[in-house]
Length: 392
Ligand SMILES: *Cc1c(COP(=O)(O)O)cnc(C)c1O
Image (cartoon, rainbow, N blue to C red; front, side):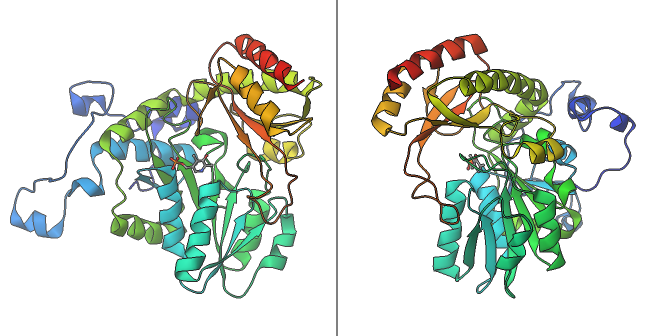
């Protein structure tokens, strides 16, 4: 847990610089640059009085170590949050936050394009706790008020949405939900903590799958909950009661990844833009879904609310025949096939939204999601060209 920081002499620098220098205390660790990897359960107290009052910074491994504090402070700085809680996965950040704010009989509004396991969890909440969920078109805008009910408690956003990459108007929806006293959450994984700060757009809780770009090397599972002052107490209590502590090594890898995130993201963005524009010009491609492209319907919202893009986008092909598309995937040599994204390597997965969305109708066709990694973009283009040749 991190509390609001006082003024700091480094605050005049850009976030990219501040993330390398603030809240890092080499002199506490014999001058070594990084906060060491603390492993521990028991923390000793000097005397009975301190033990019973819990009056020292660390009290038990589950509640944090200097290793977790280092990452929590850095993430809270990046997202301009009142505080941060780490979790063992992105999903556990999402489920802990939802459970902290809903009760039996509540109604929640969830964007139709949320990460599919988030949707599964909301459906499970409905079955087990009677929490009703309405999925809404992410482009709903001010019409979201038509979906509000007396028992509506929470709006859950994700921008751009998973796979279909649709942009929602975050500040508009957050403002309308707050007029009704609702809590607003946003899955901010696509942006990472650097490209969008949902709390500055009116969101109460921003969620990160640090498994993706923060860790950045496909070698750890990790999540984070970033909260504002108002939402803090409730989500901190739930996090504590639920015992949601990530492993020390994963946290250490998260901090290590965060130090190079700004430069990695720039490289992902540059290559992805180059490849996305090339794909747009190809006869086999119907549409590239990537808000950083001028042609994307979400481009103006992205430009207004985000400071950059990453390497993740989707393509709709002229023909959605899954067999041919699988042939294309099999022909790729640099794009691995596997879930997740945000590592150094390029990835491809097929998807079909026909049966996984309810508020927006999607045709029954196969499309592809690409993660553009840190390889030379010309090599990736040549690989994709070979793959597209298999669609004929
Ligand atoms: C991957 C992902 C998650 C879940 O993160 P895990 O660490 O895999 O649990 C949540 N939201 C989005 C948008 C994701 O892409």
